[in-house]
Image 1: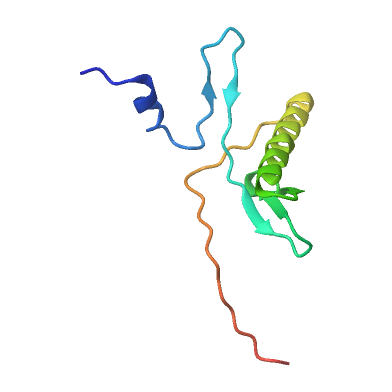
Image 2 (image 1 turned 120 degrees about the horizontal axis):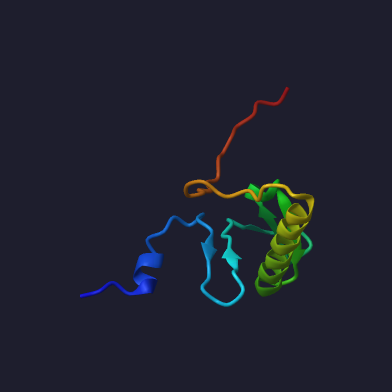
Length: 104
């Protein structure tokens, strides 16, 4: 039984750019976005791999759309400057870390 193209595509590392087979070559980049609730409502979104790129949105949908737009703008600016586009390496993990401080 032959492997389907989608089955082999899912085995690729999440940070590997992919070029489509459409007429105009297109590269897909994947970045980890950290969504944090904002005190005033909505969400603050940070993209750690892109020098801490930050945006926000009033809803999760808007925050996700704003993050995509911010990533595209960031990458386009790097391309215009002739800079390398950062890639994520490995799988990003986020964990809460509790610390205790003794009052000074």
